[in-house]
Structures are given as structure tokens and as C-alpha cells.
Image (cartoon, rainbow, N blue to C red; front, side):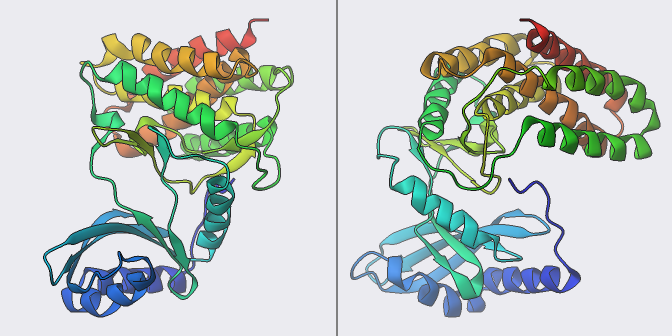
Amino acid sequence: MRFRFDPTYTQRAALRAQLACLLDADGAKDAVPGLLAAGLPAGFQPVSVHCTMQRVHADRFVVQAQLRSSAGEECAYALKVYADDFGERVWAHAQALARHLQPNHRLVCLPNRYIPHERMLVFPWFDGEFLNRIVDDRKPELLRQAARLVADLHRVPVVPERLTTARELLTKTRTRADRLAESWPPTRDVVEPLLTGLEDVVASLDPADPAPVHGDLGSAQFVWTGERLVLLDLDRFGYTDPAYDAGHFLAQVERSCLVDDTLLPRAGSWVAAFRDTYLSAMPQVSPRNVAFYHSLTLTRKIYNVCRRDPAAWPTLVPRFAERARAALREAEAP
């Protein structure tokens, strides 16, 4: 499970140059048709290309490539480019998943191809609404669909890499908490008791059969097309207790409510919609372990709260800590 990658100066510069080329109209028109030629519909002759930036990180970016043919037909793709060769690993994992995941109403978005010399994965493009931005009456049912989709993923019999243990995941959280305390010393008194409680529980977690996990599961990773739910972004894929994905997702749902007072009253029902459906579909997964990872993720996200909203952290951090303690109490129960 790749938690963090810091590209070199040279890698960052090359990535920026590649992004600039794709966003340049002439550069995109010259480069993109050739890159996508093998996957274009039969007879599709592109006459125009337009690339739009979607996401940019230090080690990767995503652009939408829209192509129009001489006959007026259109097609679109998501192009994800990496600073290093990590895309090869994602491609290999996606191919393994594709051999087992059957097309149905729900869908895991897998790449169509990998272009090594560009360090680029090519994905189909899905228009729709991100699940984290849907806050109306559709939300509970969509959360239940998401839970069933995640259960499908966790049942796939592949071993993508070595096992990541609960202890390793807790150590990563401790490292982030140490960085947080250096920049925001008052948070130490809030976070340290949570870490102590997690340390007490980690050794007594229920036995778990590891599974292929998404690794960064949250409602922002799902797109609702109006017809089906699509799960995106396998960049954090791993092999661990599937309760990690479930607990991480629940924490992310709560996180969106904790930072928005208008959503707080809905947090409980939204969490229950996903959790109950997932545990019903995966009865072998320990509810205690799900609660542990729920608490672990909320504790880790306190760092994000302080970094992204330094003015509001005195209000938000106690909220996160309270919900992390509540999940921890569930994990402590026999």
C-alpha cells in the first residue's frame, strides 16, 4: 500500500512539462490521437482534441481528453500520468481484478491501457456526480450500493502485494500525529490519548482474512452516472483486513458532516446505511475491526483539518476527537 511518494525535483519538473503539453491546444492535438489510437472506436478519425485539468498532485495528475471526429462524433477519456513507474503496478493490479469482476449495475473503473513511455494510464470517462456532493434523499440508497460494490471488490481472490498489518497502519498514523504536534502543539493533548487507546486495542483485534482493498475509500471516490455507481482511483490499492476500507469509508462520511453543520444531523443515518449493508454482505468481517479503523482514520484526518483550515481547527478538532473516541469504544467492546 503506497502511502506517500515524494518525487525528485527532476520528476516534478518532467511531470509539469508533460501536463503543460497536454493542456496546450497544439500539443494535445499532436500527442493525444497517437497515444489513444489503439483504443479509439473503429473508424473514429479525430480532428480536434481538448484536454481539461481535473486533479494535480506532486506525483501525478489527471486530465480529461475530449476528442471529436470528422463525422461529429465525440469520445472522452481520463488520462492519469505519474512521476514514476507506479502506473505499471496499478495496471497489473487492474488486469488481475478485471479477470474476476463481472460487469453489472455497479462498476469499478479500470484502465483500458498503460503507455509506459508516457507513464500514463488511460481510463474511460464517466460523467456524473461525485457521491460526496450528493446530500439529498438519494444518498442512503447510493451508500448502500457503494457498500455492495466494495464487498464485491473485497471478495476478489487476488493477492496484489504483501500484507499490510494493522500495526503498520497505526504506525503511519502515529508518524502523521508527530508531524501535526510539531506544527500545532496544542493538538498533542487531544490526539495522544486517542493513539494510546488505539495502541491498546490493536493487539486484540479479531482475526481477519486479508483481501484486496481500495486503500483510500471515501464517497469522493464514487461517481453516480444516473444509472450506476462507479468506483474510481486504485492508487492506494493494498492487501489487508477489509475492515480497513469499511472503517476508512465511514470516517470519510463522518468527516464531511463534521465540517458542515447542515449535514451533522444526517451523519448517523448515512454511516448506518453503509456499515449495515456492508456487514450484511461481508459477515466474516469483524465489526470491532471496522470500528478500530473508523477511529484510526478520524484520528489521522485531524492532521488534514489543521492543515487545510487552520482558522477553524479549535472548533473542528474536538469534534473529530469525540467521534474517534466513540468509534474506539466500539472497538474496545468484546
